[in-house]
Amino acid sequence: MAVYTKVSAEDIAVFLSRFDAGTLVSAKGIAEGVENSNYLLETTKDKYILTLYEKRVDPADLPFFIALLDHLAKHDCLVPPMIPDRDGQKIHQLCGRSACLITFLPGVSVSHPTKAQAEATGRALGDMHRALTDFDMERRNSLDHDGWRALAEQCGPEQLDEIAPGLSPAIAQELDYLDEHWPHDLPRSAIHADLFPDNVLMLGDRVTGLIDFYFSCTDVRAYDLAVTHAAWCFSEDGTAFDDQLSKALIAGYESAFTLSEAERKTLPLLARGAALRFLLTRAFDWINTPADALVTRKPPQAFLNRLQFYQAHPEIFTI
Image (cartoon, rainbow, N blue to C red; front, side, top):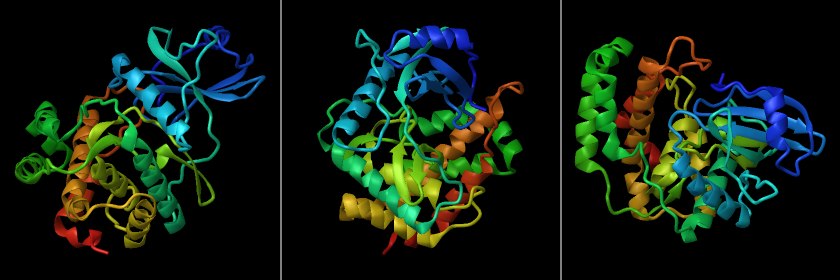
């Protein structure tokens, strides 16, 4: 459960008094997500999301996230902007954390996506990338290719091998390969960088919202598609690849924003990088999450399986 900071109903009511958002009726912690504390609020006026920023989210990055969401909303992308209070402020303090009140979007995240849902998600990602072609703010990707080796070192070889025998040398070998081949000349833009199924809201086959932009940053644009591919096109444990979801996701993306030939050729490599990135962050969290933390650790093996699949099957991106 992703509630690291407990907030009383009384404190939430005081927080809401700064906004034209009605009075509090109910507040419920949201189990999804692992980075921040999230509450679903129902007031006499509407529903809202209250987010308190924890762990990896630097408060100094919040203006970037706010500007990004505002930009996307103005371009009719389905995202949840942060709501200003009566003085126009969007960033607040609550229980010692930076906090924002966020627009509630209807829909649910799917655990077993269909071909139509994957296509709709690809299209929504393409629409987002098209809208961001004139977005000028930048934020460094703190979990980009340049930081993966340091992250592996923080995990430690012995701890990695406790997760899976031989994991440490396998990661070292992949890091060497990616260091040698990682692209430096592909188009860059702001990207979501974490578009897993639980960050996409849907009603039926229709996308109603892209959420949780707290890994968003400036990086290789096609890498965003690779991350989404790794998240959507496999079983949860990474042992089964769905070629129909893969084709639908990419086709949906290209219906909104066309990949260049260079981007398409590099997708197999970018997908390996995406799998390694989530393997490393899951391994780090697996090793370092306190036993009493109210969050379920996600098994790193699921992304080792994806990485091994991408290594063996670069042809899957050929349509």
